[in-house]
Length: 227
Ligand code: ADE
Image (cartoon, rainbow, N blue to C red; front, side):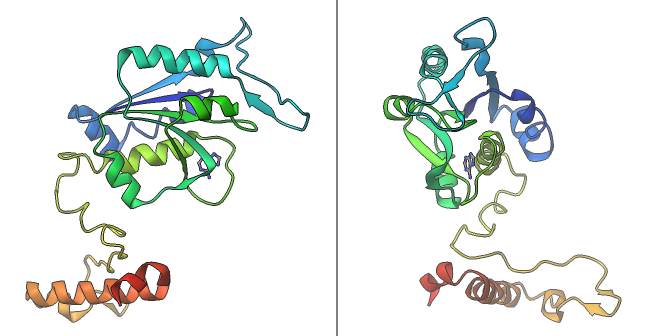
């Protein structure tokens, strides 16, 4: 999979893909992420990419021209399956969306700033608008990093243990069960006996039961599907 990211602050995206699972995904050639400074396509030599909004009001708006030039130039190199704008008024990101995006070949992510981007870019180029939650961040860079991480780890071959993505929270609309590691007794806080029983079938049943209970308690909206 290839992901291009358009941003005015590429520095914010320098580190997130250089460690751990995202690093491994890239080293294995399963994922390439390219971050592009939008100011390359600025309208003047001062790097201008935003302007006052028509109708008045506080806050700048990212202009049509730099975004259009960037999208058109990048589109000459690859055909995007989705051009995604990260915005608080987009569709809420969830595991189902991550699963479905992980099946794509090429994605272009647009990080907004200031008051947002000119509506005409959304109308004419953007194919999907995604929010990572009902709160407003100062830009789309952190949401873009979250998207890449959630999608990248699902690519076949990225995780060592192929089953581990399948047992994540949310994969079955269920939260993950509790997990424990050594020691078996820490300050008198004991690991549940069942996990030491060696009975794999019983352990699976226990884990499933814990998942159901946890989901019911913490995310009743999700758990109604399991009643
Ligand atoms: N940009 C600013 N806030 C955002 C959010 N919650 N989700 C996606 N992009 C954003």
